[in-house]
Image (cartoon, rainbow, N blue to C red; front, side):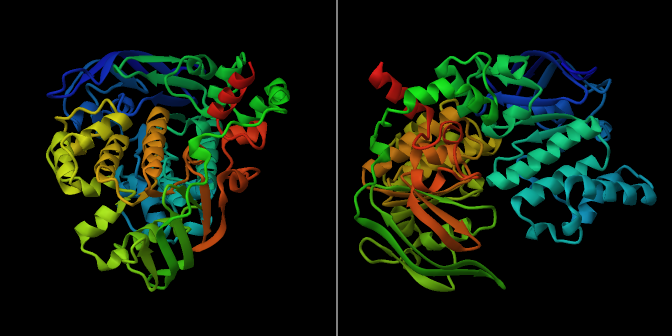
Length: 543
């Protein structure tokens, strides 16, 4: 711990009503003033519960029982509900736009201060200070709905910073952002920590983006038990680690490198060993057969005056997994919906292998041919329990009983079948919808940010599922900002910018050397290496 403790958990156990086991067990730790504290753990381990306990949302809003003691800036959450902590704890959730309550940037920045009754002159000054701090000057009059994901995230952070909290709590702050937008948000967060001395507690699954900035790591294991320590020490045994740490573990580096820069400095001997070794080819690296499963010709999508997709031609081959990449707002989601036949096209046609256009089929028939997993998977969940959703998924897909639940266990094994889907974490809801859509083994599978909220083991499991689908003859198109997932599962990358295709080729050719889209292993070791598994297999073959 760097400074005096601002957050203290003393033997905190949280048990939700009806749960067989506690979500947190005997958590004891402190977070100091001006620390950037990273909370890590498997999907559903209890990270969001820990974050919610900091400002009293757990248990005042969520229900259940909290035993032990949580104090923030000297205030005990047992006697200070969330309203009484609003001036010292700012919270930004996984979906920033869901928390907006006004229409424009400046109104949103001022809203929290209005609720606390601050003087107009104070509010005006703080709004301007926050605009300068977070680089929002060009956005001040903009509608919140017109902002990119990264811009929305910075506004959401700014809306709680204007209150001048001692603690800022962030749940998955970069999960929905492209690499460039994520860097902008992380730069803003680190500036808040270093220039303002705010204590930041963030839960994040994309550790490759943030771990190098952390002062302190809290690990929540699958049983809800909590440990904490220095980043390099905590990550040496953590259940989830980014590729740079996985590489360091494999290479035996001590201390572990947490950034690409530090890893490059330590990687000389490893690069020398790999110089004469050809990376092993695996089935996932094969280009796949040329049989077309879907052909798109001249796709144009407009949203009012905005042209989101500009005459895109795209061919998806049976047996191939393709990554659709590009910055937030590039048109990826619009293209997916148009391909599925559920989104309107201003021009162009989509043809399946038999020549039919999904837009001309019934919803049920189209789904069995082209399944789409949207960015907001909760929109597809309407049953009372996970088990009921799985059973309905089997019926809708015409699959054998138990198919959907088996797929779910493979992606996210710790989800309780009796839980209500709305009580699941973001990653768990995504895993459930993935299982439902995969149950029918569609000829074409379209996924929009499928790794959002998934931990590394969950992503590995998903990559295995997609590989199995492709091996069975399905075509898979994944719109994603997750460069590490792309390196693991995609044979081909299509890069979209402002609605146009600007690159289309084998994954290694497109991502190597890219400052934004190259995975960590590629940045550390260079071509042709993409994943730690490639390196381990190569070294095992010559040992």
